[in-house]
Length: 136
Image (cartoon, rainbow, N blue to C red):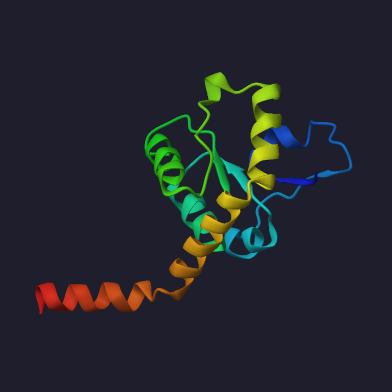
């Protein structure tokens, strides 16, 4: 299994990482995620939106604010695993979850279908139409 670690730049450069893990620094999620088989992230709305749009399975490790909501929502939609609170995260649980994230075909199919639906939407056009209907 290969992995890309993004963010947390101050600590990453001090880690000794195996050759199958690459510390990328900042890369646009809109470019990166469509190239990924799955994603593990904190559950911020932007990262969640990018992963849903890419149509890939998600594991959220929430620790503050709306991240708990997005973790639960992704799980309810059937496009991600049950979120793991950061305080409950351990090596065995993460290994098990990563394996499931990459091998669960039902999860992969559901995520792919949702990604197709999201990519087919014209969000800006719809937003403008709704605003004009409401206020013009």
